[in-house]
Image (cartoon, rainbow, N blue to C red; front, side, top):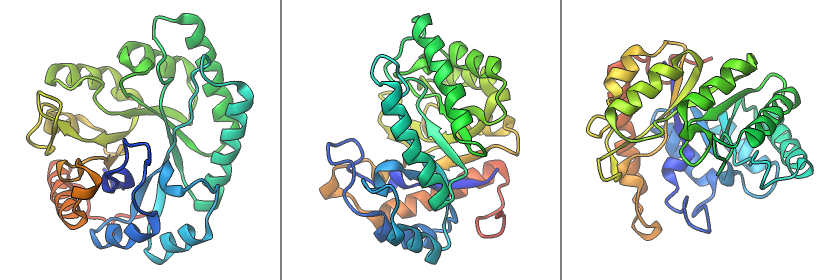
Length: 274
């Protein structure tokens, strides 16, 4: 299992109206110095411009491969028109070609209800169209709460029925409790291509991977070696912008990466690279 770092882990403004507190270029050397060569990129870090020579040059100079674009494309048919989606997907396609992304993370229907069968059918049509519009790109449907993934069976059945080679699941626990997370993984395991690593305490506050309610040691032990993973959040980075300590967050990221590699026998970054 190869390990990526998500740039959202270094962005304390992620859930504010500003979304970003620093430009991506400024943190890329720190990511590389922490031992990562492959990254998942938080879409707002790419700015409002579809492409940026400054960002692309910084990625190359830091020897960083932008592997997954963490997109906020909204495929909910009640909230977005086909024309809006077409415009957004054209932007995504241009970014994939320009930066060299190999996959794109998509929420499976933000604010959609699994019980709304008519909307689910339209969502499936949009995924089929998306896969055809982004040939050669892996489309990862994240099992994120507040979406069709609220029902693990529904999102699993969608991927099963699609039988689309480029479409798979990005596993993260939909519910943060041990047995539920294990049941979800057991159900979805055949379709999981990537994993977002984070953990929580019982009160949903962020926890180190080895200390929270999600038994990652049991999940990773059952994971196919072809599945890749991203360190998404660490507790040190969950704070107000004015309290954010980049150095402390990077140290915790390195500690968490070491923990995951011990569990999975990952080859350290910089040796296992494509």
